[in-house]
Length: 261
Image 1: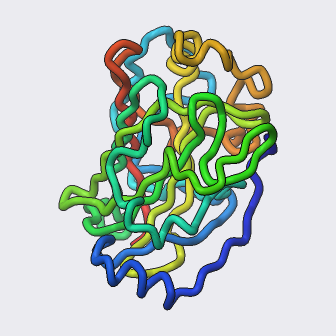
Image 2: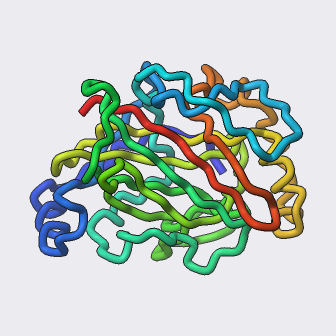
């Protein structure tokens, strides 16, 4: 597969507004937009850096206390924006029967312009590849998943600014280190307030890829460090998930996301 690259995906605002408005699902918030690397970070999601080599599967770090923007990243080659008008995509469980080590993704959205107060009613769209590095919705080398929507989902943040997705630990594909894409949309806009990616500690990723469900795809030999990844080479301080759990019981990945509302 290819490296992530910018895709110029545009949608008719009125058409999307009409579809989602009729469903009454996204609390008035919509999904769209893309930007390449920018400044900032999460509300200090983790102090883990790109040289993380801990053998522990609990990589929790204390919040640094600063209130900064999440770095902006490419949407990548497989955003599948068409899901935004599909009511079935508003869901917490995005596995669609895909096997893998269970992963709960918790994102907390904060406003950097309001002392990092939680933002409720923001729409969050996440997507990632399956355990074998395959994305839903696209024709890719050796496989065609057009019409499928696994490992994609949309939710609105609750009163605490949080969304929780149930999925599987993502695999890898040539040219990229393990990651999850996400976008945050506010106030009915079809332009994303934030487009970014979640990074995972290498020690945890290595353990997962050695497990029985992932061993056939094996370890990622195409990108072996964050420094050699074309997205995370400038650092992962504000995009590194805080991880807890284990192979047997699954993992929980938490990231605090600062945006300018």
